[in-house]
Length: 95
Length: 488
Image (cartoon, rainbow over all chains, first blue to last red; front, side, top):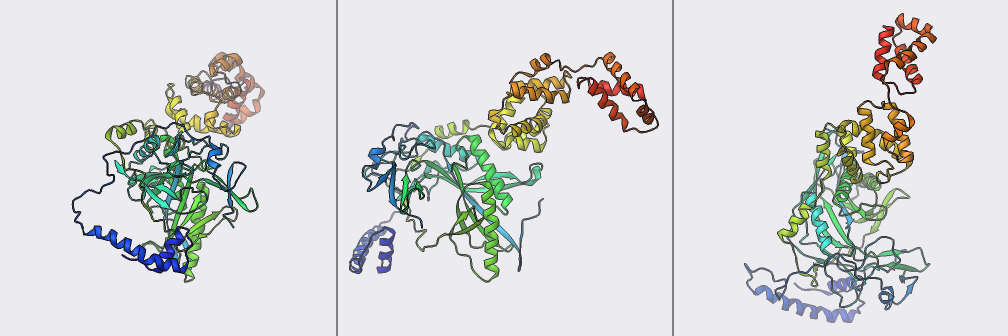
């Protein structure tokens, strides 16, 4: 598997990254190197091996259905570029 | 067997194929992955934890109750429960999604295939349709955007962000707006019986994405469109009608259907394209590295199964076995509160058939007039049972029962006390009844002549006059019998 400039532009767009033509051109071989490296893993015979989901023996823990968080509006809004009347305020996202 | 639903076009008849994806908000105190509250209507951003706001380094921990509710729902749909499931990230950018991804379950959902049975005709068990459920997965809700508060800004409230949703995906098994409506109503009823979702469509606790395609009967499925976030049964049915007609028109004019997301405009009564960008569906799902697989043990599943109530289908069949008509049984089990009220009434030693007729005719009529729900009913099941028993044992007549019931609705007093206080007991005292009958026959000698000359229908007149003279309290059986004795 390898990527071309069109794919890099597409991925950048999905990630909302603005990239110049030069940056895209530089990114193509870089990403292909990483993909090639990851593809080497395919050479290992994994027939009959269960996928490893965690490197330590641990199960997913569940929480009780108890309200013990929230009510911290000031903290939640503290880093917002703009907040009005208790809302985050963002540039209008509808025409 | 109902005739299949077909739409006529210039090129012949078309069949519509429908699938529904229903998002149902899970009933829980706290959110799916955080300890923030879920209550509706709170001040903006007051029910938001740092997890819900997607602050760096915050880690999700699933709420056991949300998982339990989804499992119970799956069991209620007779679905396969997956003891091993996993969470995935669905990546997209929008101002109501602070994480930049929604935690969902694409590859290994919690619940697999199940079924919902719907009756297309409440009076007819033969009109049953089995609609397949493809899967149920749990996922996070997004925040809420408000566009009308400021000329150039949108306001974001994250109170809903991270609230647990069940996405219940049907198979493309429905073939008419009526089937889709019946499916949605039945699903809502089941969720409310189970208690896993309050089913409140106005508050957005349940919304449907409507997948519609058309084809010539017998041909392969056509290309479908998806109309998002439809929030009432009526609108779902309208979307299907409108979208099927639009697609037929496009196809018959030689065009092709574009697989796209559409939006329902309730004011104009039409659907329109929401977005058709080529990358709109490029969600780049991958397993969420913050969450281990979800593994459930038998004890957990056993508890879920044991906690399920009697479900609508089972309850309907039980009612029918008691001699209650199919229509009454269907109406009485459609809403969980109605069914509970009726079950409470039955536990008070009443005749099931008579009780069902009374509830459907008298009680529902009264609640309609009062604009009240059954939960607000001023008459308790125990008091209603007393009223029904007074009719059954002949203490009061059916018509007096209506008067007593009105007084019960006004005062909340028990039936027996009202009958006693107002002297409404039915009398079978032939002496008193005979005395009134004699007066009436004497006063209407001309009508007696006509009756004897063969005008049989006048009998009803004499019954009516006698009942009136007795202020409705005479036993109708006795009145009939005494009149016959005197006239015939």
